[in-house]
Image 1 (cartoon, helix red, strand yellow):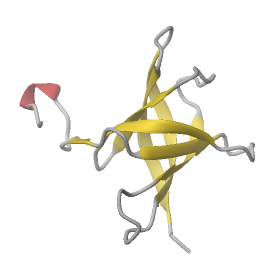
Image 2 (spheres, one colour):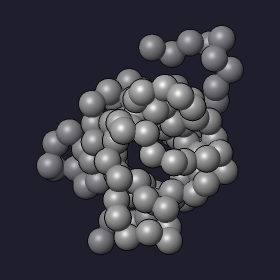
Image 3 (cartoon, helix red, strand yellow):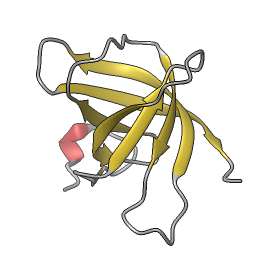
Length: 102
């Protein structure tokens, strides 16, 4: 639910359970996580087991839709916040650019 006290420019949509895949641009292996929420400017996700991400890292991102009628969202994002020591690991990212679906 939208909360004005969040001081955010865009509303966040609860998207719990949607699949999200990320990788470092220099890597070929995709890591899978669970999307938590999504907005026009970014998203947050959970990973189990904990993967080594750090603030400022750029990631290639694919967010799978709930229905196969919609193509996946493909983007480049930057890690802006993470909760260390939590299981699952909570990571928040902001979108840098979007990739056109082929």
